[in-house]
Image (cartoon, rainbow over all chains, first blue to last red; front, side, top):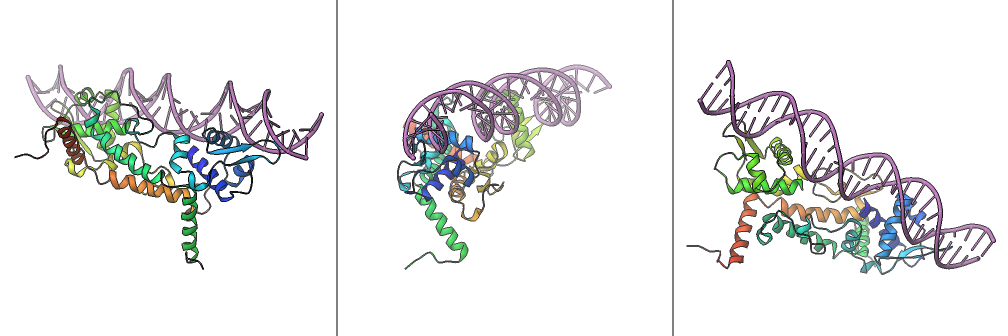
Length: 150
Length: 150
DNA sequence: TTATTTATCTACTGTCTTTATAGACTAACT
DNA sequence: AGTTAGTCTATAAAGACAGTAGATAAATAA
């Protein structure tokens, strides 16, 4: 949930880039996310340099970088923790298993590392902008409007 | 934990295939898994047709199919639930999001489906036997013993 | 038949994480 | 000053997760 909410909010912000800060309450309503919960999420994202905020009238949240520069992997790690199914297979938050006698030859770890790599390859190469493009393409297909333009 | 324990136990059983049923307590000790917890896991795997058991003296658990036929994806779904990061991206246990207005064009879902597919591709194509082979290869490399044999 | 071995089942109990809420506080703008 | 909006801390409800306990049923052996 946390990562899902966070991503929804970020995508919403990416869609209205350069239109000034957006209020938490506005985001919360538009994306139907509990407002107080969204507060925590956005704060977390701010503390990790993904968002910036402005207080007082005319304030709110905005992306601290271009949508092209914000990768989903980063966001998910901040909000949900490491991508890897097992801590011993994580690149960014490695923790060994205590039962494992020889990690180098642990079959489960070998496979889970493959899984982690597959996930990371997708999530660390996909940016908010990429997602918006995918959505555009999908809705164009859906309405029968061709993707190419003059 | 549950899936990890389950896989460890299954790999152990795969290693001693055709040597008759193995006691829960034996498995629990060898793989350092809490015995009572392992009971539940093995029972679950039995109810899903992955294991078979025999009661009384000389009893215990054994694989109900060859290690080649038991795919990791199956095991993980039984013990940990669907692979997909989000229920709306699951193939085997699809549940829609309530907030999502148009699922066909939900960007997050599109990406998470890609992630799910990547995971499923690995886990549904890797069998217990495959894992054992990988381990063999890894330990051969580690000890400097070449993989090929006479 | 009885005793023994071993799996089976039900229920339960902490602990931790997730999800969420409340309310006081601080900064900025008018 | 007053209002708007983000910041911070504490906390709580709910559920998942990890593990435990103990009684039961089935198979085998004597």
